[in-house]
Length: 123
Ligand SMILES: [Zn+2]
Image (tube, rainbow, N blue to C red; front, side, top):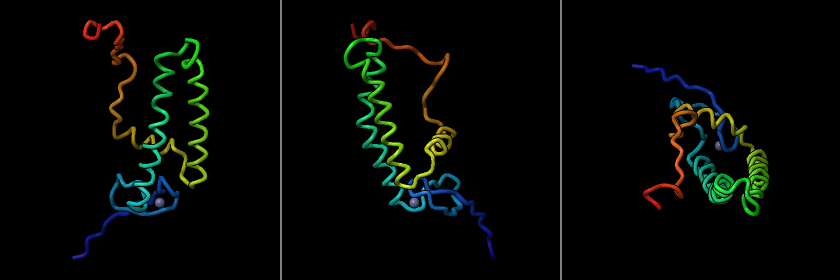
């Protein structure tokens, strides 16, 4: 018996090539490109996180906080250019799909503001 598998067309999030897959969540043409994308994000994330956290916790203060936003923006522009040179499609498409699956990040009124420096547990 012939079973028809419906293939959908999509773009590899690393190289930008068109490929078909029956699996709805597949975003890369090969496992190698999935790994390269993951390595790119992990290595840039290691650089970005300390800068982003410095900005978030120290913004408005002289020194590291006030410079962190400009540094973060410059680094993100560099990363976006690297991805474009690589042939990757705009990252917003990737984010839209990942976000649809749930990032675990809660925003708006549901956000619980934690101030560790004023917390009874840490004071
Ligand atoms: Zn690819």
